[in-house]
Length: 169
Image 1 (cartoon, one colour):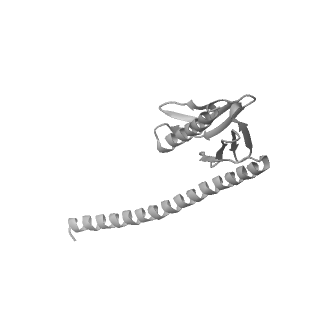
Image 2 (cartoon, helix red, strand yellow):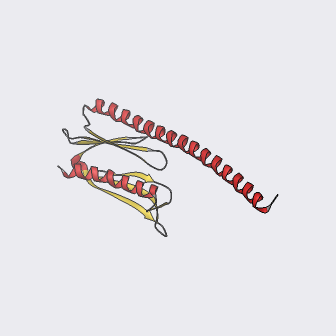
Image 3 (cartoon, helix red, strand yellow):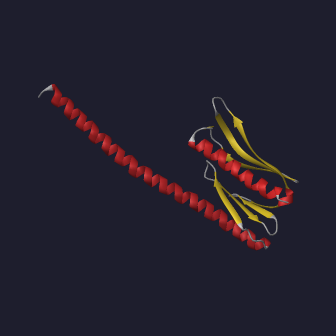
């Protein structure tokens, strides 16, 4: 057996192993993605049901809804009632019902670390009576990474909706 034949067999085995690995990664990745989507939908569905029950209890009708999820799979559900000028915010543990005129400010805060990393990405919603904090990111994230940028943009979008509705007093 010549040296070139041995190299051919080694390359063939390497390509077969690479193909098997890619197939495994593709099927496993797809399963993880589907499971993640199911988890995301379940969390938001549970929060929406909670908002719906609060809506019935308080005799209001939310006409605009937005759902968010953080890096620890906890959700936030933001809903607005334009007619009664109220907003509802549901978390896994609590529900807040606020009038548009109760909101003083809403801003995104994070703790900067070295080399473009941030942690503790949060929305601070100041009302006339309290300061509500919703944590969107607890881990260390690069601001330019997919997940870091996603969490920062979701937190900013949350504040933009709150600010746009409270400013329309």
